[in-house]
Amino acid sequence: MDPRRILLAISGGIAAYKAPELVRSLRRADHLVRCVLTPEASRFVSPLSLQAVSGHSVRSDLFDAGEEGKIDHIGLADWADLVLVAPATANLMAKMAQGLADDLVSTVLLATRAPILVAPAMNVNMWSHPATQSNLATLRGRGVSVIGPDAGELACGWEGLGRMSDPGVIAEAVAAQGVPPTLAGARVLVTAGGTSEAIDAVRSISNRSSGKMGFAIASEAARRGADVVLVAGVTSLPTPLGVRRVDVQSALEMRETVLAEFDEASIIIKAAAVADFRPAEVSDRKIKKEELAEGASMTLELVQNPDILREISARKGDRTVVGFAAESEDVVAAAKRKLVRKGCDLIVANDISRNDAGFDVDENAVLFVWPNGEVEELPLLPKPGVAAQLFDRIEKLREG
Ligand SMILES: Cc1cc2nc3c(=O)[nH]c(=O)nc-3n(C[C@H](O)[C@H](O)[C@H](O)COP(=O)(O)O)c2cc1C
View 1 (cartoon, helix red, strand yellow):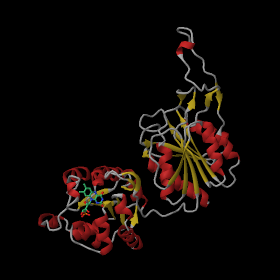
View 2 (cartoon, helix red, strand yellow):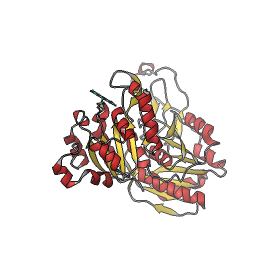
View 3 (cartoon, rainbow, N blue to C red):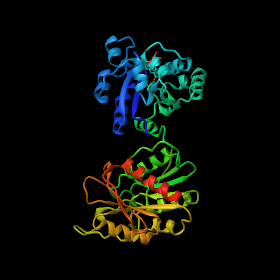
View 4 (tube, rainbow, N blue to C red):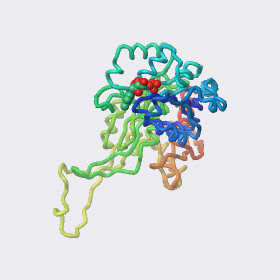
């Protein structure tokens, strides 16, 4: 079961300003969120903002008699399915390692029996200090999970390790807590996003794929413990937690990368919108309008791209290969034809004529089309939900 009730403990680092965004990411993933702050944290983020985004009153004072009357500090510690500490200051990590309980947050952290996930954020020298590293080792030794910190430019002006992980990535780490590693040992290769086929030095032909479906699939596979490679076409999405990403542009580059990763893969899911055609010739400079007669039209000759799904299905052996079909009419018949033509294990078909599902939106309504002719229609679901349903089916298929 995913943790549902998240107690977000916020300590006094500059990254506390990201806490409202983190609350929103957690609530979007259907978690109930309550916030507690250290007194120093409320200098960096307003309790009122946190109350507004979490939908619950926010506590900071251990000795607030009125709030203790509503839900006391032990009640908060017991309420949580997971306590998330973000940002975790060097000071709070030291207090946790020592078992100190001199404010609401540290007392709740000592009292809870829920799993704890910390997202440290601090200056690079504070992070690498032996005291902090020793506290970190103590916390890890007690089963506390840690996400980040990331490297980059820090608020204090230094460069290096110390940035709090992105709120979206922390939300993914929360979602991964307690998920049984049913895909441990599997190597999952996912393709996502559209390809971009160059016309000249500045122009290209692409499509409207956002990559959201494929990225949700990669994220779900990682949540279930798989070793995941994500071959990403044109997309602006951040890399899901625990996923190795290879960026490509054209269909030819995508084919090359997929073939290079093919041998090691046990499950291959081709969710990318790969261009069927590419310009026959690519100019290495910008084609100028003045090169044509006034008002003249321009003809672009297109040649077919290789069919990657058919190629890998033909040599799949005991790998599981899943293809996607974006269809605008007669979806079931078109998906069945595609399944036969490609020779894969399953086609996930979506009707792109719907406005509420498919390309560039957060939800999808798909059909699973199986080689025995069976068609399973799923309701409209958020894309991570579709990804979970897909892996439930793939795991059954591989067991059977
Ligand atoms: C502007 C400013 C930014 C700070 N940022 C951080 C930080 O990112 N990480 C950290 O560990 N401490 C940071 N500190 C120091 C903490 O605020 C300080 O150690 C404080 O005692 C932490 O209290 P708490 O852990 O109870 O919230 C910062 C202090 C100031 C004045």
